[in-house]
Length: 227
Image: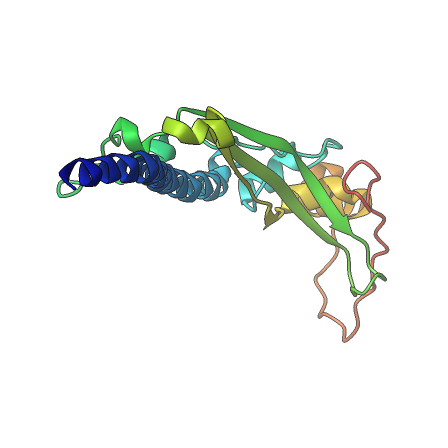
């Protein structure tokens, strides 16, 4: 009876030990992949947050408006790629005298990470397609791909690495300088009113504003948006 019980224990161990190891490695991989999935999305959102630093003169400011006067060039929208540091807790630091951020242990960091960013530009919707006026927005699409190493018997089904991807569209309203570059008629009138050298009208006494205002017919530049 003792020999039979020993043999039964060995058979049960041979059957259930591989199943236990597969479940154990599956839990380890799931935890790593879940953390990397969250961090990949955080890196993409952080890229959209700091996109203003890459395009400081595309948004509204008096400086950007005056520098655009007389220019027919449309300001370039730069797409900033996500940085890989958020995937290991190394950034953004948000450090202070009470809080400091350091990189995570290797278990939580990806095996590799590759940022990307589709070409940025301007997107336009022309009036008459459900809108009462033209709408021009700047857009960019940062993305991030991170790989997590697979260990143990899971490599036979999942491979040596698994990848997690995330990307997002970020839309922002454009500044006055972009609008001046898109609409030549509007740019000419504003330039004439702000720069006295280019104003062809002679000085006249000011008069009270009327009850009606003459509308300006605007025609956007074909290179400005995807109208």
